[in-house]
Amino acid sequence: MNMEVTQISVSDVEKTAEEMKRQGYRLVVMTCTPAVGGGFDITYSFDKELSLKHFRITMPAESDIPSICKSYSGAFVYENEIHDLYGFVFHGMTIDFKGTFIRTSVPYPFKKEIPEPTVTKVKKEDAA
Amino acid sequence: MSNRRTVIPFGPQHPVLPEPIHLDLVVEDEHVVEAIPSIGYVHRGLESLVDRRDYSDFVFLAERICGICSFTHSSTFCQGIEGLMGIEIPDRARYLRTLWGEYSRIHSHLLWLGLFADALGFESLFYNAWKIRESILNEMEATTGGRVIQGVCKVGGVRRDISNDFLSCMDSRLDAVEDEMQELVKVFLNDYTLKKRVCGKGVLSAEDAYALGAVGPVARGSGVAQDVRMTDYLAYKDLGFKPIVANSCDGYGRCEVRCKELFQSVDLIRRIITDIPDGDVSVAVKGNPDGEYFSRSEQPRGEVIHYIRGNGTKNLTQFRVRTPTLTNVPALVAMLAGAELADVPQIVLTIDPCIGCMER
Image (cartoon, rainbow over all chains, first blue to last red; front, side, top):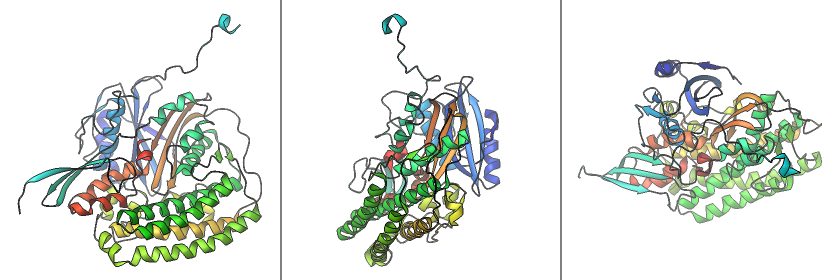
């Protein structure tokens, strides 16, 4: 399976999607994850004849990102989901739910960049 | 005839929906002009638990993403970790994972056929579909210990072996299951009333299916020969897999694909039983995953993606899942545009929506 990810700039997102569409690729998924060096990675994965291609942008939290709905109208599900869970704003979506696609009790629940420590630290003196 | 548009809410509670999804149906004279979906009623945030569990324990959580394709979620997750760590699982484990994956597909398709019959008011057909499904669940229970959640996959292989004698018994029991399924499928594909409810309803052209990213029986029912089993994961390469497609591009096509896939899965299971090599079912796993991996498999509903990222510790740092139902939502929206209001419930059902799976 191809794990090569091509880093692109946010200004190239629409152009890359157009090119993928022209070449006959299908949009597989848009994946948002906290980036290693801060900010967030949004990875666009495309498939043609069962071969995957990945493109990635790295963005600071709450950035504005152009939608790829012009090329892939079905991208609205991923873009709305990323908006609702992470807080990114996509411009030009075919259906913009304005934060109501996934209704969460906490706004943007996945926005935290670094996972909080989950192991309870016990002081030496307490452990003794 | 008036041109006044009305918005009719469909769901989240609806007799045909076992799980909650909401659609705002914009209708004009009994025809749907636009359908606007919204989800979030059963969002559990399972993916965010990944940094709090050992990666080998997370297999059990991954399996609980869905109650129907649970086995495929666990095997896809293990496959991702194994890809990341460069682990080659034994051939017998590959075959066993394929076998259980195909049993899961039969049980999922029979479940859908039953629910679909129930939604159309055909109760006896529903009972028959689920009666056959019980035989499949019994095999799952006998070989894994669990009917719905199997807990048999682990990083490095599988937890349980099936003896060759028991595999032969499973093979002979498949004959009766296949005969019963033949009778069932005859009704689904030939009954006048059923055909009236699905033929020409929920039309999705091959071009739209591909452009909207449809997967699984939704894509294949529109003539798009797309199936992850065509790649070389698990034992499918050895088994020489070819996808089943239907060209009617409507609800009937999607139903036809699922019906025919029942028999395809039976054939695959028989070949697995014949060809399964002897040997170990797992390898020892040392170290922790470091790097990122996109793992994908073909669930009963279509392609599933698990994105996994590790940093060399026992806890993964990221885990994201894209399930087939989420990617079939744009196709559903396209199918509903122009449909008659009375046809909406069965059109929604033809994508075999699994909402718990979609929301994780």
